[in-house]
Image (cartoon, rainbow, N blue to C red; front, side, top):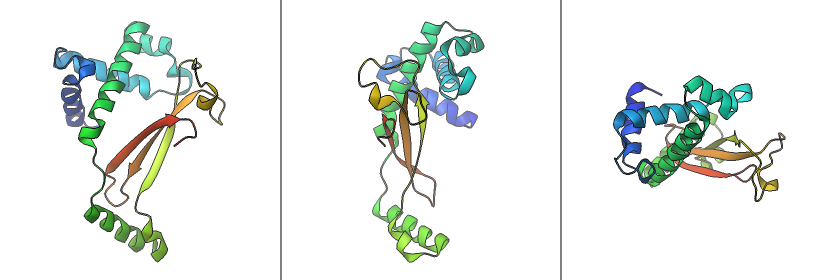
Length: 164
């Protein structure tokens, strides 16, 4: 993420309900966003709240709250920032797929979907079986729907492991 994109995202998040609609200063918004992105970007041994709180120098409660605020803020912005592909974009993507693959039938497919599992910190109290992934841990699945010719994200989907 570029510094400019980070600053713009923090500015947009500052205006969401999750960040008390502008009651949080821009400096604190940037701090909250950086801590949440650090936590969400970890995997393996460094994924636990304890490790992340030591690294970021904040309490575990603050870390959990700030991550929650950030995720809720991003979900609030989702419909505002992401728009599905127009007919022109769809046709451009379809033509690009045909041209790149040289397989005419593949031109009917004009979207790319890629997803990842985000580990849950603990076993969910409800519907825990639905969140148990084939890799043997509890997770949520996050998928992005992308136009292949421009790499523009047109939709994001959050669901249970294996549901997207």
